[in-house]
Structure formats: structure tokens, C-alpha cells
Image (cartoon, rainbow, N blue to C red):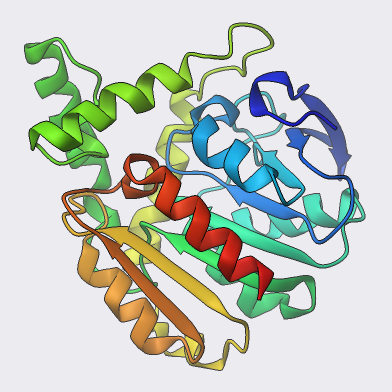
Length: 279
């Protein structure tokens, strides 16, 4: 398999009659790490610095779930249904046991998977996400629209405001992140559709209105919880709550950073994640 995300070929696997687009890279052996991406994201929205860094030691698999990017079907409007699709994908590739790395919306999906199918999961990384019932997800649409308006007014990318803090250091990191996303020039993924965005917004609102996160207390897998100290999309306090509820959790909060802290502090995040996955 290729060593970097730039050279990873986009493939498709049949999942219940629907093609799911995915890419894989890194070593061919060992427990694979399945990446579950954020609201509005497709395969090309993963930071190569993070993907390639993890792939130095681990088999990395990126996937578009149903209706997202190059995958077929219609995106479901609940986190639970998305988790069912992720499980079906894991089984379709016959991966056996996996580690999960879920960012933002993907972190919610990962939480459901580890609760409903613990037999499939060894370890979990939850970045910039929230437990069910916490405030924040229902306001994602308004936060996105405000960022798009500000970006248009200032001639910047919305992710400058969605993922990064307003400080000079964080904004410079945003420039580097966006440049890395443009490194891949061929075989790029299809953009997310408006229908998928609507379904994901509904799923996030349902997640906020969901039941108490107390069920997370039964999760018996090691979990690494990561966020920036100024997450304006899914508030940083939710990461503290996750770490408090989960029985075997480590918490890492990065300074001067927002929702995309794992991209701003990619070297530290990769080092911590690889160390966590090794143990």
C-alpha cells in the first residue's frame, strides 16, 4: 500500500449493494485505524500531516459513509444509522478488530460503534467531539453559516474560523492546513452534497437532544480524548465530560487552538496517538 495519502488510490467496496468510497495506506499488517470524518467532510478533508503521520506505523483506512462524497446511497439523518453503516463497511472489508479515530461528527459515530459493537473495537481516539445530550451540535448549522459569511467578507476560507482560533499563530496554522489539503491534485473525491449536509445537521441536532451519555460508563476500551482549548463548534467542555464519563480515558487539551486542534498541533497529535495505540 502507498506510504502517503497523496498516493492512496480511491477504491470502492460493496456494502449492502451500495458502493462505499475509501482509501488505505501504510503497513498492510496490524490492527487498522479507521478514520471517521467531520461534518461536511469527504476523503480529501483529512489533513495529510495527520493521516501520513499515523500511517508511518499503522494501516490507515479513510472512508466516505453512505451518501458522502464518492459513496452511493443517501446519507442517513441519525448518528446511530451512520454507525451501522460504518460497522457494515468494517465487516465488508473483513477487517476484524479495528482502532477508531473519530473527529467531530465522526467522534459521535465512533462512540456509538464502541458501545454497540465492542467486539470490533480495540482502542478509540475521540477528537473535537461531544457525548450525546451535550449542548452544541444543534447549533452547528448557525456556526457554519456565520463562518461562511465572515469568510466571504474577509476573503478567507470558512475553516479559518470554524477550526482555528483568531490568534496570529492559529491563523498561520490554518494557512498551512489548507495548503496541505490542496497537495493532492488528481483522483480527488466528490464534494459533499447539500442533501448530505442537511442530513448531517439533523443527525447532530438529534445527538444533542439524545439520551444521557451515562451509557458511556460501560465502555471498557481505552479512549484518548483530544480537543483545542477554544472549540467554538463543539465546546471544549464536552471533551472534559467525555473524559469524566469514560472509565478508561486520557484527556489532552491543546493550547491556542480550536475545533481543528489536531491539525494545528498535528505533530503532537500524531505522537500522542501513536503512543496511545502502541500500548
